[in-house]
Image (cartoon, rainbow, N blue to C red; front, side, top):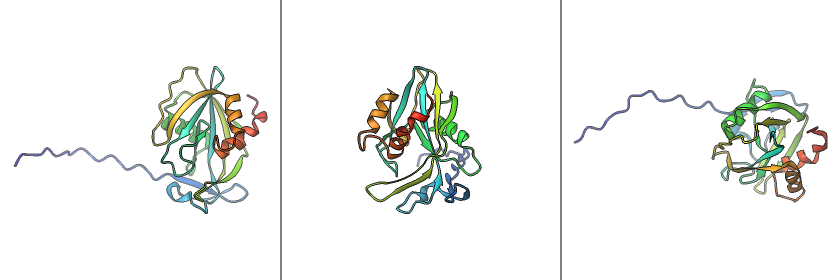
Length: 190
């Protein structure tokens, strides 16, 4: 019998369970829950964010959600969405997700464009999104390389914001939250 080498290197620590912040109807935190268990047919109201990343040439980074996402798989949407963890600011959550989801580490001018945005959307299979979801815009240098995590992003492209807004007017072309958000884009002061 041949000797088989044994790997004695330490096991890397397990990733901490991602949790979302649960909210009451007034938007105040009332606890947290594992993200993996929240999105159901009876999704509780929770905190999220949407971020629109523009480059210095004025193009918007639009992404297509990975095909195995639990909510709205394969749907084109804004640049990045996510959930702040308990005790994490929305801004910190955005920069964290831009890095882990898209490989974007240089962000300038991160600012809220619709701070009070709230929506509820139901998928054909009955799974619900139910979020208070502040909307932010950020700027990156033109030519920024995007390195998407395939578990999060199926594909991406840079487009004129006017093109994205046009897509939002065609039913089902982009995510329901992005459709609502860009309908209010006149307030964004871009």
